[in-house]
Image (tube, rainbow, N blue to C red; front, side, top):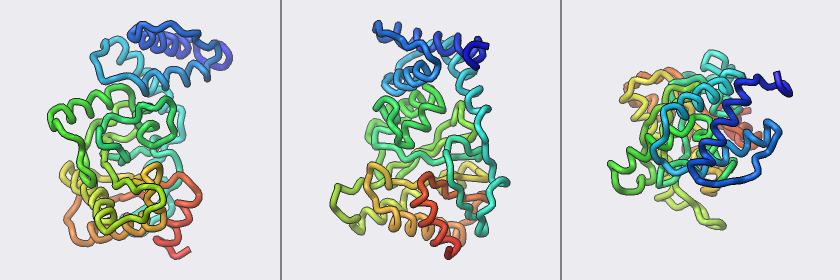
Length: 266
């Protein structure tokens, strides 16, 4: 042990950092403590373009990230107490959900967030999944050859996440100080329906939604929750689907209270 960290884990971290720095042909003063090194690795992964990378790097990265995932308190649908039919409410880190698919609130480039250590869900998901997620998204976008349309969705693997898939959707962006238009409201509903359609098409059992568009995209939280719940309820009542669990994953206390009141009247 070295400072509470397994030696092989520390060596893996050093290898991953040095590989990405060498790739950038960049010399920097690498910090000496584990947490600072871990933050540096995340930053280097965040800013890396989707270029070719060695199988050895991916092997070490996958071992490192999977080990991190397994140290977390993972949650399955059977662990969730707040249930209304097929709909569930759960507060926590979406990257710890052991479900068939988690939903990522992406941007129109669909490549993840390039801002080092940004706290948006797009960054968090890509950072925990590994570099392959950006590569797969890049392949999709190259074939598509046009920005992802608001309200649509794409499915990818989840790599080192505990979920099986990630479904990426682009929500409407509301300018600061403006209210959502009817078109924005329809677009947000379309995000949820597109994700549900993809989950059903792929015969998935469970899906976990984040609060799409309510972060840096400025969609009002109360209205977004109403749209999300209404769209899901209408879908489940009108569509033949394999889905048994639709989870509304919230992170903030405010979102939790909004969803709890709308779903359970509390």
